[in-house]
Length: 104
Length: 207
Image (cartoon, one colour):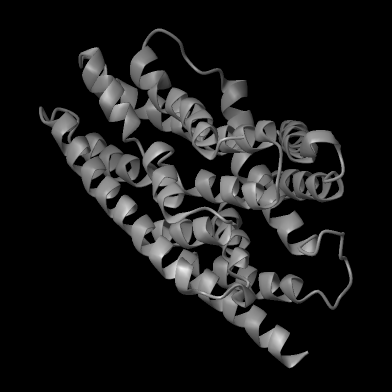
């Protein structure tokens, strides 16, 4: 598929969300149930992107304890928890991956 | 915004996009976290349906911002609403809503918001361009694709506040990981929907 068409498809839905209530305000309101469901979007989507890229980085599931990405991600998770700093988490995580891959 | 834009640019090159495509993606989609998700899925050759679904789901938060800003823009003519909505980002929202709540009667709200948006936009596009240039210089052996999950780790951990969030997230991540073999990589949307459903049930039981 044409990559530009793909970008446009991504953008259409994204723009629909952005415009939704700025345009509709006062005409419709979001239900309490919908609000509760939306609240679970960040943890579910993000962990769905994190898990496979750590556990299946070679194409097959790698649950073994010598998966370097697993340890690097763990270190990054600790940094994220204590600092909430995106750039620092990436820097430490990448550093940990290099170190582990270099050592073993 | 700057680190995010850089990572988007670097990851675009890392996912096999050309420089023009990388910058073009920021111009057309203009939503960092969802672009990273899209890039990761493009690199993994996921189906179009799954890529677009994931991007839309990540960006559903804009609907909440839109609802929150809608009160302040409700008397503007449609072209203004359409333009201001196009520029909506996490950061422009955060800056503006604080100002609007402190000064609800400010007559220049639209200009305040527009100013914040234009700065964010320029920084973001420039940052992507720099990232694309930097990314092209970095050898593949550096495993730069790992920067995407790391970014999501930094964003996900503060978003997990209750046990229900954790269970929902781990369930979604697990289903996605084991569901990679499903047709059209439907594991991800399935995981997200199951995670949200179980999370809501758990939360309901706690009340």
